[in-house]
Image 1 (cartoon, rainbow, N blue to C red):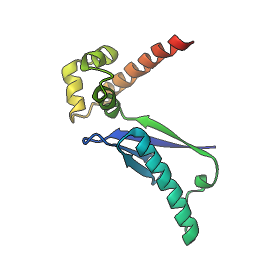
Image 2: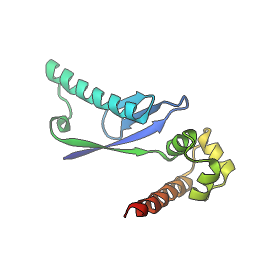
Image 3: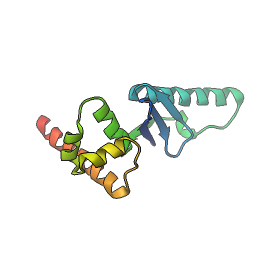
Image 4: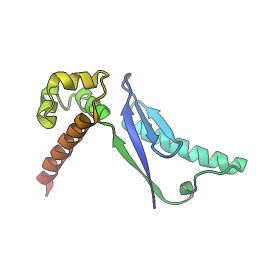
Length: 135
């Protein structure tokens, strides 16, 4: 089975976009689920149109494939803080990055790689802690 890598980002207007890292497909929507569904529709439409018109298309579309989605660090924070699930104070505890810096990341400043790694590590640690609840 082919695995396609896709990135989910939250736009400044609150909508979501998803795009494949190594393929031409993308989607957009008001929610993550809508953006994913839009990309899947685009993939199916592309295949159907290519078949009807006799054009080549990526071979993986003929077989079983899965799309592996990942969030970029800033979009992940925007999603959870924007949804009211986390506060900046909570994010500071999870990531070890002060609230003022987190606020700037949520409002346009791109975190450097070391900070993105801290954010990712913080979320992974939180996920690990939560997953032990259900063992």
